[in-house]
Image (cartoon, rainbow over all chains, first blue to last red; front, side):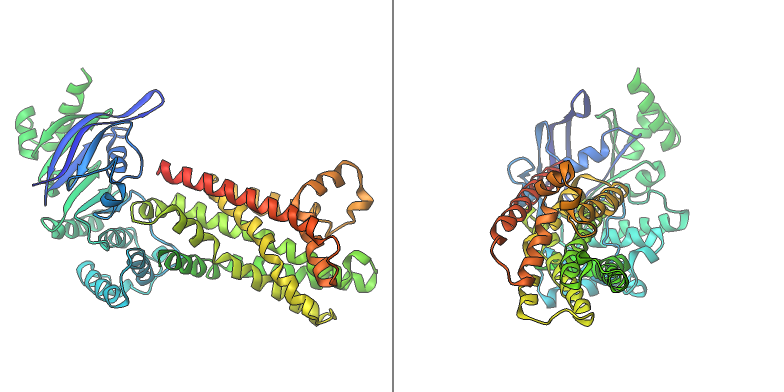
Amino acid sequence: MKAIEIKNLTKRYKDVVAVNDLNLDIEKGELFALLGVNGAGKTTTIKMLSCLIKATSGDAFLMEKSIKTHTNAVKSIIGISPQETAVAQGLSVRENLELICGIYGFSKDKTKKKIEELTEEFGLNEVLNKRPSKLSGGWQRRLSIALALIGEPEILFLDEPTLGLDVIARSELWDTIRSLKGKVTIILTTHYMEEAESLSDRIGVMKQGRLIALGTAEELKKKTGAEKFEEAFVTLVKEASK
Amino acid sequence: MRILTFAKRTLKEMLRDPLTLMFGLGFPAVLILLLSAIQANIPVSLFEIHNLVPGMTVFGLSFMTLFSATLISKDRETAFLTRLYATPMKALDFILGYTLPILPIALAQAAFCFVVGIILGMKLTLNILYSILFVIPIALFFIGLGLLFGSILNQKQVGGICGAALTNLTAWLSGIWFDLELVGGAFKKIADLLPFRHAVEIEQMVYAGDYSELISHLLWVIGYALVSIILAVILFTKQMKKG
C-alpha cells in the first residue's frame, strides 16, 4: 500500500522554483531518504507534505488524504522533527513530552503511559528532569524525534536529523531511527551519503527542485558504475547539470 | 483543552525567565521607591504617590510586550512553532495560548505596584481593586503588541524595539516622568494621539474615584487594544501559513 503519492507537486517563490513537478510514490513502512545539495528542494518538499506550506500546483496524498483538501486529516497522521531542535527550551524533557501529549488531547493516564513508553524506547530516563539547553545535541535530537512520535503518526518526517552531531551521537541516532523501521513510514532528508545508504530502503536524489534519480543505494551505484555511493551521488548530480 | 495546555506552557516559560521577575516586578517597584525618595526631598506633584503608582503600573505593563514578543520570536527561531504547526493546533489555540497567561502576570504586576504604594503611604481603598481591574484593557493593548512584534521580528529586533524603543516611548509619552502640559506643542499632540497617556489617566482617575472623563480615555485605549490584537492575529496567521 502507498503511504505517500506525490503528483506533479510544485512550489514556486516568485522567480524561484523550489520544487519542480515532483512525482513520487512511497510505500507504507518504507524508510525513504531524500538526498541533495543545499537548495535542492528537500526541506520544501517535506514542508509541503506536512502541510506547513501550500503547494503552488500539484497535490500529494498521505494515506490517501490530500494535502490540499484534507489538511487537518493529514496533520493527524504525521509527525515532524524539523532541522532545528524545535523543543520548548524553558521546560524539562518530561514537560516537553507532557505538552505535546496535551496538544494531542491525551488523558492523564494515556500521557503517563506514552511518556513511559517513549522514555524506555529512547532511553530518556536519565534526562527526564533536565532542560533541553542542558543536553548534548544527540540527546536533543532524540527528544525531538520522541516528540514527533507522540501523536502516533503513520508517517514521520525527519529533516536532517543528524546535522551537526558527532560520530558517536550520529551512530546512536541511527540505531534509534533503525528501531523505528517498519513501525512507521519515514521520510528522511540528509546531506550525508552514508546516512542515506545505511538507513534507507530507497533513495531519491534531488537537484534544483527536481527528482533526478530514484532507487536503492545499490541500484544507484550500478546505474552510475560507481563503487561507492558517494561517487554515485556526485555522478548523478553532475550528469543532471549537463 | 489545547489552549489550556499551551497557556500553561507559556506561563511556565515566562515565570522561569529571570527577566520576567526582574523587569516585571522588580523594576517598577524600584522606580516607585526611588522616585518616592526623590519626592520626599524635592517635592514634585508628579511623583506624589497617588500619581506615581498608577503611572508606574502602566509603565510596567510595557514589559508584557517584551516578554510575549520574546517568547513568540524564540519559538519561531527554534522551529518549535514549525513543529506545533504540523499538529492539530489551530490559530486560535496559539493566539489565546500566548496571550491569556500574560494577563494574570500583568494583574499581579499591577497589584504588586499598589502594594509597594500602600507600604509607602498610599491610601488603601476599594479603588485600588478597580484600578487593578482597569489594567485589563491596557494590558491587552501591550500583549497584542507583543504578539504582533513576536510574529514579525527576530529575538534581537524584539530586544531593540520592545525592550528599548517601546518602554522609552511609554515612559516619555505617558506623562509619568514629566508634565506633558508643560512640554506642550507637537510633543503633547502626539502623546494625545497615542494610548500611553490615556492609560495613565485611566489608572489615576480610577484610583482617585473620578470617573468624569474616564470613558474618553478608555475608548482610546480600547481602540488601540483592538487594533493591536487584530493586526497581531492577521500577522500571526500569515506567518503560520508561511510555515
